[in-house]
Amino acid sequence: MKRSLDPNISTQTELGHLRDLLDDAERQVVVMHETSTGARDVIRAMDEIDRLLALVARSGVDVRAEEGRAEFLRRRLTRAAPGVVRLVQAADLSSTLSDSPTWQAILAAQAEQSRQRVRRLFMVGGPILAVLLTIIVLTLLFPPPPQANLTAIRRLAQEGQIDEALATAQAEATRVPTDPEAALWIGALQTIKGDTAAAEAAWEEARRLIDDEMSFYFERGSALLEAGRPDDAEPDARRLIEQPTTAPTGYLLLGGIEEARGRVPEAIAAFQQAADLAHAAGNSQLEVIAKTRMGMVMQASGIPLTPTP
Image (tube, rainbow, N blue to C red; front, top):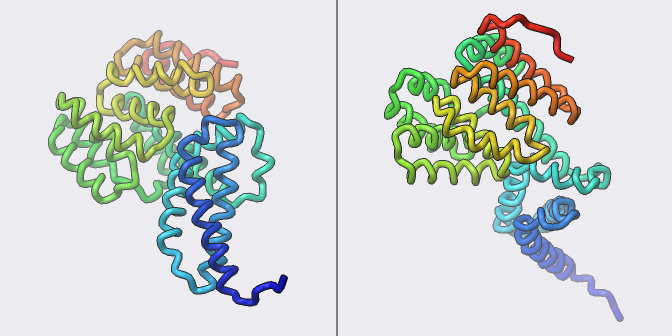
């Protein structure tokens, strides 16, 4: 059988394959947590989608529609980076993705989200902690990436100007619609105002942007704590504590909640538990944060500092 020399046939075949891959990936990304290889398979599919997009585009075919679908998948994977990484690592498949550009992008997104989480972990405490660590740590170590400007929102909320803080948060959500921080603050401020429906709508938007359930609980609990609602924040801390992988973060959040309530012994106990669990998990960064928080609470309360293992 004579092989066709028409290059358009090859291009159309590749375009059809690209569309089939996009169809499959859009279905698989929703259920990738249901099988041990689900996340790995979606990542590999994205690698092939990106390869085919470049190949077909070079032939002069308009692939704007396919690129839009691929970009949606990329954003979904990077927004959910912590959860995707957990799925791959739980299946012990990281080594099989060492050559994957999509996997590298997910790891980079996870690292950036981790840096943002560290900033928040330092911030969800009392005023002494916020002032000291904002000046010493945030300025020196964590230059802020482009994101919603929360400074005015925090200041207005702390001054009790809730309507003004809410208007500012809503403006920031419009200006930076991909940053969940503004939506989190809208939810917290609507909670203060007692508008449950508006708060739930904001939480749902934040959950959509964060796209990882455990990360969402931490971020929502932290936002509520910053807004002066420790009782509303506690259920999210408890949800985190129920899961072994997020228990250290949950206890850290709980320590901040107890500190805000003025319950010093309970705050110290929660921070110590966070440090112990982080140490057992090999998370030295979180362990240091928990011990720092505990030490500052003890110092502020006049409790002698004793070395911790």
